[in-house]
Image 1 (spheres, rainbow, N blue to C red):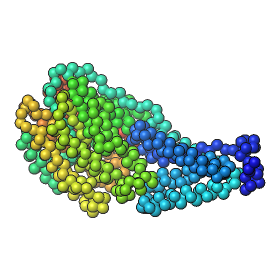
Image 2 (cartoon, helix red, strand yellow):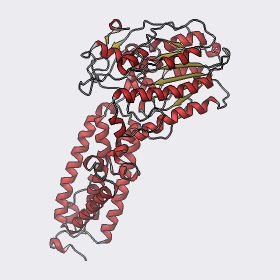
Image 3 (cartoon, one colour):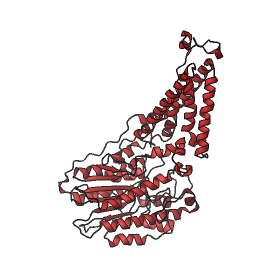
Image 4 (tube, helix red, strand yellow):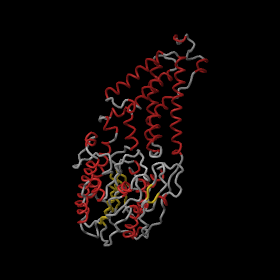
Length: 520
């Protein structure tokens, strides 16, 4: 019977001694999983479990398939313990491929894939020339490293593996009194208020505001966000309550975004209008919490790429298989451009789209929010061009382009017929991020009043056909749909006080300090 002459026949694969001594090979699927788990654990409260698992299981499955193939090759070469030898090749070459974007970010496709291929060949040759005893030692070492690495990642993920879902707001609602007119709700992310554009960006937005005023929009020229971050702001606006009321028992870990994200996924506004017989069409953004909505009757996206996937792929060798420049692919600029272009084009298309029931069209459009990927004419801006321009120029260019698109959309929606025209709300969730040189996570209690004002002053314009009474000029987001639903749907929410809060930083998301009286 054949034996391994390199080890004096002591490790014949069919002996009882070998069976007792053989170490199980655990590392290939663990090494594969690590590339996903480490990125997930670094963004522990911001990545939905479903998004991470959607990447995790195909990666692990691919490693198992590759392992089976290489074990078969080793078996065909009559190597002892082909499972361990094939697994080593998978872990080294596959592991390198899955972290290539981090360890070899400067290599192009040919050099990068060549490096992975060389690693596979060298490891394969070593695996076929390593004695069975040495192979056991190597397996033990790689097993230990893989188990420890994955164990540490799972330890960091432990908080999100336990449920922490905010309870949806429940209100009994009779939609029989609702007006059967469409609702168009557009959230231009970080769109500045007019005074901010003038003082901070040296741009006069009067032409756009006059365009809206000429079509009977009301501009709330003292509008402010209730909070300085999108998740807080939209959670309050979409659920018609302050975050303090929506999350009365915040999570122990103050950096846990999940209750806020849950309130964006299944929100009261969506359920109220669908209960009233409306369709709710959600135009997904590239930002995961508003990419879809459970309360929507229909979600439209340019593709199914999640924000987590768009960040994970460039950290791997998959970046070389996309055909895109690695720098552009790495920061997801093209993906942001494509998703936002889809939203704007879909809004245009939906104006003439036939539908049987009234509908809420909701689009969280991430303009003029960074990255600055749109030029003033809507053409794509690459990273080098963006960096050659000032923050002011980039912001103004994206603002002007969005103005052009919104003007064209409004001209098609507003006919002047108060009985048939849709309700239109164009309202930013927050103002621009101040151009400040603080740490990455802004300490909102330490910045100046002017910097807080820049962040919290928002653009807000409403078209309310058939209603003569204009909303107060200082209306905050939390009152938007309280006012509109009371007017058109016969609800009796009534307004709450228009108050403004900040929180210390992103490690204390639920410790609020009121700043209502600091500025208007």
